[in-house]
Length: 210
Image (cartoon, rainbow, N blue to C red; front, side):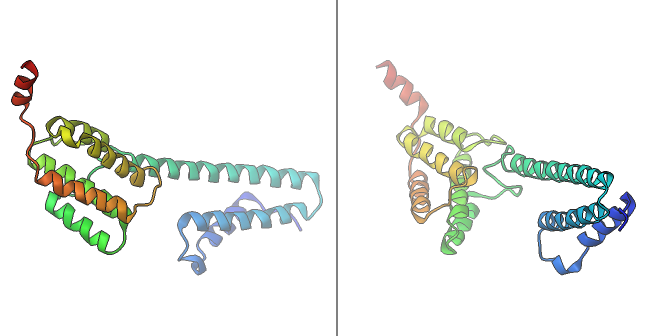
């Protein structure tokens, strides 16, 4: 059997990738599995004649294609990671009120989706603090920055705010799965923060002078 040329190889690869039998698979899975199958067929074909040139051609083509696949996978993962860690991680694209974030959190909790519920509850805290002018509405604020700024007006909650920020970061970026306990802790903090009056900065200054 004679080796196939590059045009024929490309055509066969395209046909494999367009096979409708695998529509339910993700694009990346389809590309990986079908290309690997194609590479196997290609190696069988080029080595069938037993020539050294055919074997070398098969190896080179395999290395090139595998390199391209590795580059594509790396780029997709890098893009996904950049999107996940992009500024504005606390809030989504659509501006929501604290009440709307709270409702979303309660709905997610009722469905047992604790990771998303924890995220929405911290967003409710952040938006509530903004609405009460206890923190600035700074775009791209991180959870840690929120906790640090809010602690200035609410020093009694500094430790809990920092813990809430870590909980948000854990479930959002650290791969930690949210739990009922984590959500209930966040919800309790939210309710107590809503009922707390901030410490007047002028009063704190005068107290320090005394």
